[in-house]
Every structure is written in C-alpha cells, then in structure tokens.
Length: 237
Image (cartoon, rainbow, N blue to C red; front, side, top):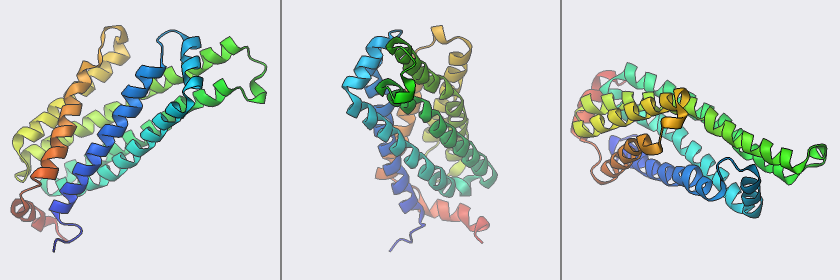
C-alpha cells in the first residue's frame, strides 16, 4: 500500500486540486463577471448585482474554494518538486504564498460592493447614483489589486516549470509549457499595468492550458516513482 506521502498520492491530489481550482476560478473570475458587470455603466452593474445577489455570492464562494485549493497546492507542489531542486522549490513556495494571501485580501474589494449597494443605514447620506459608482469603483479596485498577486503567481509558475523540466520524473514538455505560461502571464500583467487599453485576456490562455495539462498528466500518468525516489534519497532526513 502506498504511504500517504508517496509521490503518486501527491500527484493525484495535485491533479484533483488543480481541476477544482480551475473550474471554480473560471466561474468566479470569468463566468459571473461577464454576466453581471457592464463596462462603464455603474447603474446597470448595480442593478444586475442586486437582481442576481445569489449568483454574486456564489462567485465569492468560488473565489474562496479557489483560494483554499491554491493554499493546499502550494504545499503539495513543494513536496512533489522538492527533489528536483529544494532551494528553487522553496522560492516558488514563497512566491505562491504571497500570491494566495494577496489575492485573498484583494477579494475584500469585490464583496464590499454588495453591502454598499444594499444601502445600510449609515450610507443614507449618499445618493443612489453615488453608491452605484462606489460599488463599481470597489469592483474595479479588486481587478486592479489582483494584478500584483497574479504576477507573483506567474513567477512561481516559471520556477515550477523549470523544476518540472529538470526533474526527470515528469516530462520536459510539461515543464516548458508551464514556464511559457508563466512568462505569458508575467508579460500580460505588466502590460495591464503599463498600457491597459492595448491588452486582451488572450495572455491567460497558456496558463489555463498549462494547468489543465499538468492536472490531467498527474491524474492519468502520475510521476516516475523510481526516478522520484532516486532524487529524493539525498534530501531524506
């Protein structure tokens, strides 16, 4: 019977958590915003959020699930890839910790839009149009503040790609794909900061493909356990 910390069990859990994170993250970050947000129209956006409050709350719940998965993935990826390079795996671990924590903080702005629109008593001093504008501003602040944690996440992906590439117990092409995805997201995030009017979301596609490819490979093929054990032996306590 496999030990709980065996590389194959680590691989399976990482594959499952990657899929869950991808599904819930896509729902919270793409599906719901596309249905509720109307660019440049605070009134229409506010109306959509209030009419579909449950959907808005579900998107926040999806963010939370994604964040929990990312936190677990941070530890499990470190354990799986540590034999390929302990120091580099530790740097990637720290990058992902910063990314997950900062993104969780940024989500506060997203959910803060709802109590503003519901009009608590202490907000009666503001006109409805002002509250609508404030809610849209909070949502836009969430989008802007999400750029920094995504940059840390992208750099971590480059490092993880390097570790996979040199590991010997995972395919090199998978490592190259992850590194390429990290570079694409890094460039895209800097472009959003510097010239947001000239950027599309196409740069996120390699990241989605990379996550999906890694997840399916780990679920279906796993790792070369013999090679993993060979590389892990020198660092065993």
